[in-house]
Every structure is written in structure tokens, then in C-alpha cells.
Image (cartoon, rainbow, N blue to C red; front, side, top):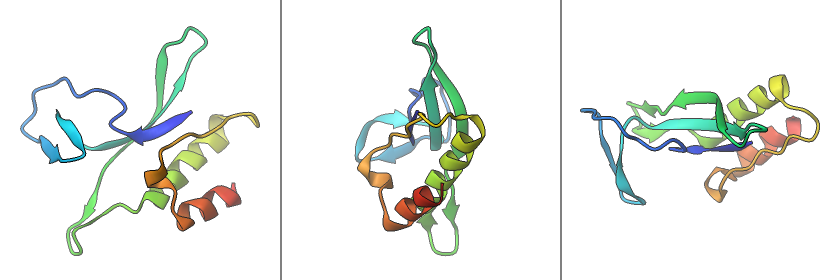
Length: 102
């Protein structure tokens, strides 16, 4: 199971377009997505969460909260052999503690 932001390509026309320097293409709303591949090799979206910012501190959602959501979903739908994969951006001490709790 793969977790990341912007796994699905933004194809629509939207007034809410973000400029992210590390992502050279235009993107729409920022979503954290959890996807798996079905037996027929097609991707299947199992969880999606809209990105949020604390307007008081202007800080984005802590990544450990996203990992926590993904772990919760996998607990419900996964099997003991399910592996969660994400990039190093999500690997924080808090995220590691969330995964250790299971």
C-alpha cells in the first residue's frame, strides 16, 4: 500500500491551484492519499484526506497524523502481510512511534 500526497494527477481546472516549488507541475487541492494495486494491476484509492493548515500558526498538518490515519485504515482493511510504503518526508520520530503502536 502506498501513501503520499498527490498520487493522482491533477487534471481539472480549478481556481484553487497551489504552487509548490518541489513539484514542478500545477496541482489542485492538496490531498494525502493511500492507494493499493488490485490483482488486475489497477490502482485503488482506499483513503484520502484534504491537506489542512492551522491558520493561527500557519503550520501544516503534522505528518505523523497522516501516518496515524493510514495505519488506522490498514488495521481495518489490511492483512498481516500488508506493507505501508511512503517517502522519507513522513519518517519522523512521532510517525515511527505511531507505527510501533500498530
